[in-house]
Length: 284
Image (cartoon, rainbow, N blue to C red; front, side, top):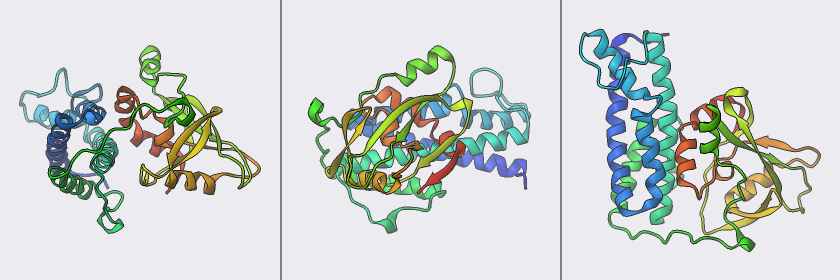
């Protein structure tokens, strides 16, 4: 059932308030450590970037009430249906940004949480409250040492042949990577291949939603014939997903996004909602 204009206005205001809370947390963390830079870029993009979903929804109501709009240019949405769809998109993308920020705080300060502390999947308010709690805890903790550049013999990330940010700017399209998990027996090494695809051109076979796990516990896989060290949790997931007789195509953020490139991480975070929505199947 479509939401009324009052309900949409209330939802829009709630989203803007949450965005303000998360922005302050991320800005504060950026002052302490540069690893939060890509999160900051994603938060800014959601509010005032090319899509500007949050601010556009708010401006539609100001426009309807004869008030000056706050964003640059004319309002993006021209009907209540457009507003509702825009808010749905905003919530989905914002949820991924908050989740990414939460992972970074947990990793940067070595904070451990129990499964009971994790909010339900679609509870954005709950996830923001968890981020606020972790932010408060971080103020009394020392930052963990950021990982140094790995040697070729033990690489933390695959050797990425393409820059997704540059590709999207050149071709005005949404480029992502997907992972081909090659077939193999249980005792063999895990082999994968990366492929660049245009998200706007079609669906994705599968997307993985999972807990990264303890970063200090790692195991090797091979991506495009180069060793790549992943968390033990992800390694075990890949073992469970791998088929003996056929390859499996799946999107996995830790591998498909170049984690050592802050610009690419910021660029890809805003597409995570669309990636999950386009996936024919989500493995949890």
